[in-house]
Image (cartoon, rainbow, N blue to C red):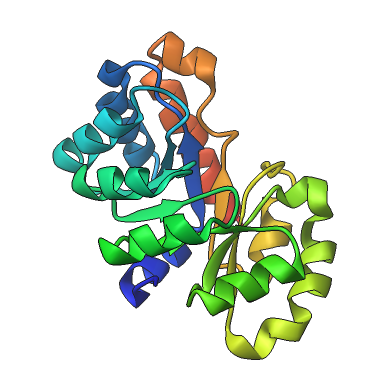
Length: 214
């Protein structure tokens, strides 16, 4: 369900900025700040009422950004984010109804997995790129290595989120089956509240340098 072009963008970016938008007016300046810092893939979550409108605004006004939308919990949300211009969708868990709805509207989709049974359910639904969540709480890289081993020959790739930070991000990125990670620590709410876009750009630059070994 994930085109090679999108997977390549994720792998090139390495760290996907994850965040929610409380006020629609912040969406475009925030996206531009991240882009200026070198992050061109985001996961905008649907945890606020502004989520859909923010998706539409960013996809329209900042076309250089690859827009992923997270916390898609219902089939109708998959349809809404596709119509709003999202390039891919993500969920914290694995809901077959949501996956089928995403497939119906041709929205590349990564369901959340936490167990081998989840992985097998994802495989059954033709998902080969999945969200590993909550990564740190589950046991981090060590747990993922053990859990994913029986499925390595199937080429499953993982997108870890939850508990990642600048200190442990490269441990995840060193794994061959992890093209990119989710970085929810990059966009701090106080910086958005104060509209300190320059500080967000600086944080993004630091993450990009760290991800590339600088």
